[in-house]
Image (cartoon, rainbow, N blue to C red):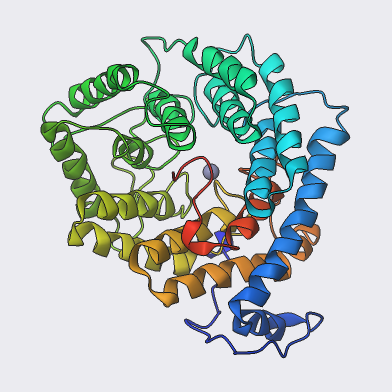
Length: 410
Ligand SMILES: [Zn+2]
């Protein structure tokens, strides 16, 4: 088990020094401790500079060097992830070139995905159209905004679609919420969203068959619990919808069932009945569930969910310093658990923990990856597996109370 993550030997808390009296060149544990004691402004400035350098590398590797040809158009592992990163850079720096770059990449992804039947934000057409529409809105280009909205509205959901986030119904719904948040409340109408919610609730109740958990879902024959393919992701997106009172009770009941049946360690099984307490990832395990519990605490104002979210944060601190860099199953993604807990509780201890994970990456990731001691991802420049995600996190550290797990938290 221990070989999946680095033992976390970082102190549980390091207070910031009022002034920056460190030099960035010191090596080893000492340099990490020094980073952690920097005044927040100094540290976030360093992370931002590093993020913008990383972004240049990601753009060169995934866009420039490919001759602007698209192999994989998705946000998850493909070129649309680079567009999403460019959009984030634009939000932080207000540099119009980043917005232009985003729109240029989305345009190429639009052509490359025309025949695709995939419908979600992370891995399908909804991601292309939603990001295109939001970026066009920021650019003040009404004609382009209308183009992407029209394309989005043409997306058809087949009746045999799964319900999970990466390829299923909630992945489409998340794109609708993203557009409504950034463009206007009823950009994707209530009626359209309601039809999809009805399908999801119906399918969940049917598979649950009045079992102990009110809603249950399957993906490729397995009843997953995590954010990418299972209950955590589905409940997370449902909480953004206008639910009927009985649906709210089913969502709460499902979350309570998960809390009750977590491992003694505090981690969460990757699927129903699994006894393997191994994965502490966003996709499978406590981190993805923690973000859903934070949302539940925000939406339902319930102490039980707040406590469970903090408990899940504890296991991420202990076992979440993964030997992987990415958002989906790496340190970058796990850092967002502490950012979400900080946003929810305002406790500076959580901001410290987010800084600790981010500083660990800033100080060591590139070296550990080149030494082969850390996995840089099968798609090493991608948003969800590679250093694109680390760049995104470093940009989010700039304004930690506004940070949101990419393509997941609204
Ligand atoms: Zn993963």
